[in-house]
Amino acid sequence: MGVSLSVWLYSRADKTHSSVSSAFHPLAVPTSSRLAVTLNSSPVAPGDSRSKWSSVHCSPHFLLSACKEEVTRSPVEMSSDGVRAELGVKSGLHVWEVLWSPNHRGSHAVMGISRQSCPLQASGYNVLIGGDTQSWGWELKTNQLWHAGQSLGLYPGKRRRCHSEAVTQSLTSSHAKVAQTPLPVPERILLVLDTDAGTLGFVVDGSFLGVAFKDLPRGVELFPAVSSVRGGASIRLRYLNGATRDPPALMALCGLSVRQCLGQQRLNQMDKLPLAPRLQHYLLSTHKCTLTVNTYKQKQ
Image (tube, rainbow, N blue to C red; front, side, top):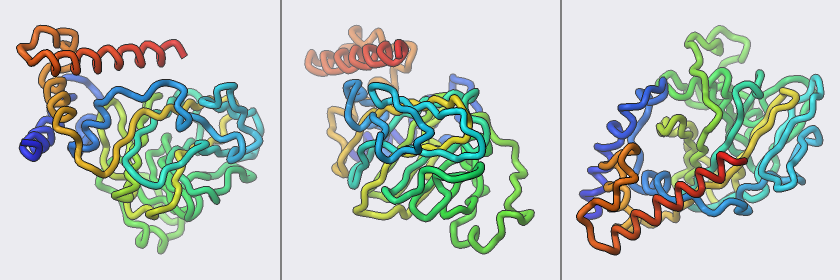
């Protein structure tokens, strides 16, 4: 039953967002049942410790809010500045939400993950997250992936080179030029880190864009991180949910399939479904919790 439902969820993935217009939706890839359940589960309560930026692992040019969930870069010229989350993860699948207005990015706006030894301040305007071997980043303005100071190509898209190919080419060569028009990335981005599989990917406009980086180091602490060169840039972090490497519970898979069949426009009609009272209560309580969290986010 669980295996059949997982296969069915894969087939539903391409249909879920078909009615919504977005340049990213045609680039979406099917998700595993584990990720699908995680993305559709109610977020953890606001204020979770994994939603905080670090006051220690942070450039002096970044100012933290009182709750430490938002950082704002000071208007300092000729400086590249980064910050990573207060808490990292070593195991499991984890999803964070990053809110970063396109109007507050400028050049070299990068988000991704880093180890604890990644530099978080440098002179001039540079890519910090992805600028060394200890970090992996997605540059939002150009859509380029960065690691070890090298551009690995565009994300999303098929025109990506592996790291071994990229390091053999100079960044000043014609091969490093982006010939494809970058897609404008909206304010809200989900960072998906699967430490068990060693992969990092992103969700934009509700579409999972696939694996951006693979073969990430295992058994070491990895942190969400961003870097910016724009004065006044404000970036907010929110931990949404996570999962162990165990397969999803059958009840969670059933709840997901029901919500996908209904679609976003009919979620408020779940009480009309001919379902067992326990499943009815489960679906309604999950939906109400999601509404509460979304309302809280809009007030921030």
